[in-house]
Length: 494
Image 1 (cartoon, helix red, strand yellow):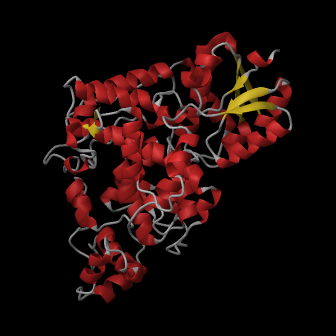
Image 2 (cartoon, one colour):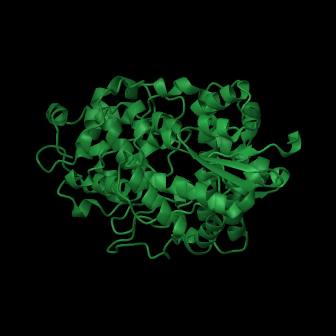
Image 3 (cartoon, one colour):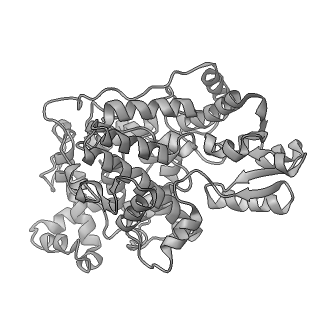
């Protein structure tokens, strides 16, 4: 075997043509199902299904190019394969250390730069330079300029970079949905049936429930999912981007995070499709810009900061949050929860392994922040219980954005709120036995009371931040503050 036809080993999140096509289109492809990797953590059952389905569909689609090996470990599979392989940069520190060790041992011939993101890691390092503090908005604007997205020459289309202020509408009143067409739904096939049988036989330690496959796992499915979103759902995405509805779990969200994170959809394909929809007059600018900001801005930013901050970032715990995750949380026991917003969010994770970004940040994340859940354990939970959770995705999202555990390295303030925000942005509160306006007594909203208990606990820190100092001033005017703090210290019902 010559160096030019060295086989290409692909991980389960490297399954799109950007990884095995182009200059690599002539190479044999090596895929591994490693049982030890499936057992390493307690993953959501549907996440394991998606990963195995993606691997097996890739093997079927690539045909004779592929050798798919099922083994206890990657090392065992590579030793049995017997030939050095090429591999793209993996997506976690642990996997990167493992691949570099395999390279030293002669089982990996070369580690190639990953083609799975718009901006290379080298490009980010040049942008980061010697910056000590990072702002996503700065990064996002540079991304727009670099890739020429939603630009009119040197200026942003519409004269503004960011239309977030127009994307914060409350959900429609007196309705169960926003009335948008349903998202793309893949059809399960013989491969999915075999995956389900194999998972049953493996008896792996999982969380959540099994269910129909809801997300694209092949490049062809990803293209269909993207097309349906762009043509039928994107126009309403912006308006209700931050809204929550009990009867409409997907609303107008794209549901593209799984194919993006499996590598079967390239982020620039999604970005360019959204831009074209705007330029063709088929979607409002605010909707297109909001979606593009999520992909070209936030998602890319999280990927690069994961590597920039380093593996010790997970050790950050600036708010000294040491409360263990409760059993109802780790077991996804949504039926034991009384607060409707929390029950809906946790139920979505149990039933689908998914909840949208506001449920993650302003319900699940806000609750965890108020209750002081340990950030490393919380990050692990998000990475394993969510079908789109991978090692690189969650540290900056959870430790930095959600829990402010890095002390402000990523976000300028802790993101939490009382029940008034949930009441404004959802239809949950009218079906809840807790009252978002009440902070004392049996019907006191755990988010409203929990917010003030959190402000009280961290008042010195919050008073020094001009974005949160007003909350401390407001807290000082609460006549029942001591009672609220004492109540929340002993709260066991949520």
